[in-house]
Image (cartoon, rainbow over all chains, first blue to last red; front, side):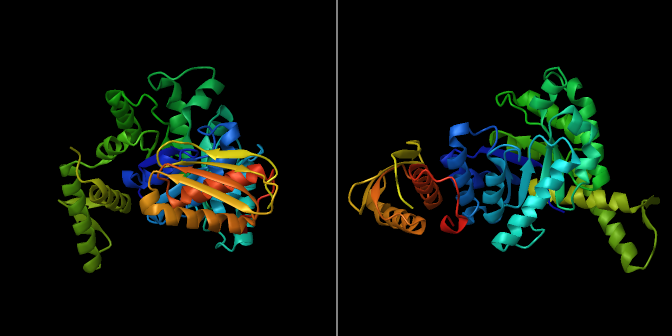
Length: 290
Length: 98
């Protein structure tokens, strides 16, 4: 069960950030070759990311590359670079239909075979950025066995919906649709970036909302947001205490060969045990909420 | 790979480097390296530059590197980007880049 709370965006053309980002302790690092890179730097950024991915400093960090869409002159070259360099996950932007994912998967498999990489070892993520993508979210989330997550991208989505970013009302349906699709597919769901990096209060308010909705985490654009996010996702002491008792009760029931788990006279079922494991995993990763 | 025109890649920001390549009339490589960390890492930088050029099959051209403390991975990427631009190369042979 990989913990994916924070996915830190790094501009693919920025050598300094690519050389140091492994120190930030994000759950996943996402090298961006799309919107953060100007048209004339696409070639150079692709090479920077290609070599950064092979830097041993990133060996123990989950790496993601956001490629350009495959219908641009850059998308396929980005994909070649990312897969050949050993990226863990390819993030496809502007995913409108399940065919977008299937086309990506076909190309990924071809590249894996050509470069000798284990077929199936490259995982996929789709970013939903349009009304079409939201409506097709479940079909997109289940389009490939390689899919590990779907992310909502707010800026293009609100433009497509002819509205603007506000208090979150404008994203409510999309958030719920993406989240339900992810849960049905058994994959992770990521919320939009919060771009006002100096507004800590606003960021935490949004994180509280998406955590309660059920999102696994959030795409981030500034390393300062990582610790705030991890703390907001950390369980309370009471949560940890209860989770430990649930796991102890489950282990006791298993030792004694009992089919039913009970704690304080109440029956506990498998989803509660799974939730308790996730609580303890988060506590192990970042302690209890401060 | 033959350098047929002048080209640049990279920046002069910290942890990056700027690479300039240009064609030369004689069949030889002219490599000039300036670095803020020349005393400590000059030999390593030159080694990475020469290895990267050799893999690309570049045997002639002027290569000027202004290093601002870049890691080896950034040096490789910037040299390759400048050479590919200077060679007007659209096709990428990935085996020559790793």
